[in-house]
Image (cartoon, rainbow, N blue to C red):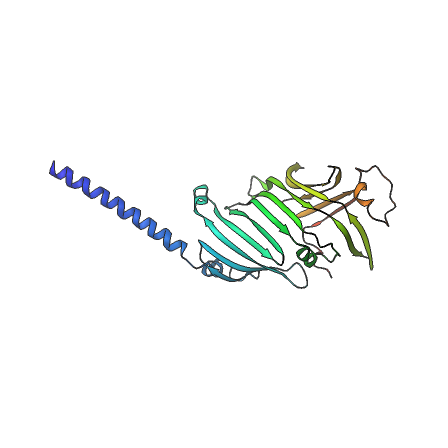
Length: 265
């Protein structure tokens, strides 16, 4: 009885040592400087700069070369440890650039990335730094946007999408052929969903006016090719446009890589 009792006392001690070691290793991992992680896994990245904090909580300055002057902003994160149970790295993130503010959750897996419940606003100063257009000083509201994109041998593209973008509209002027064309954009709502076409999983952005009438459609595939289709109803808001067609007819269709030409000035 004494031997059995002695061994039963030793086992819990070993278990507690193991638990303590795991907790210590996890704590040490979370305190690892985020800048060291970036230097190790993305040493030549020009998109992320001035990283501070650790894996649990930190911030960074980012920039995207989408214009002559790169678009620059900041990002803050707070780690979600329970995402490890799903095989993902997840964090609550706050993204800012100029007057733009976005908050949500970002999860990154081995062959996928996911954005959940992203809300906030995209300000006109951010849009004008990306496209060489004259824009009204009205932000695009981002309402609980969720996206899930996979990239594997079985599935490539967007598998789920939800949420809305809303814009009160205004006068937009865009240059083409040495001339500026103007269109008065109505109040617009963009509804996000997914669609399968030609065995491709596409992100579909359905453009509607405030009476739920169709203004156009945007499709983004897994290769970052963007298809834009605009209807007669939308083009009638352009004074120079003289076309005649049923209002739901797609009269403009463009296909191009997602960011091609956006930095032209």
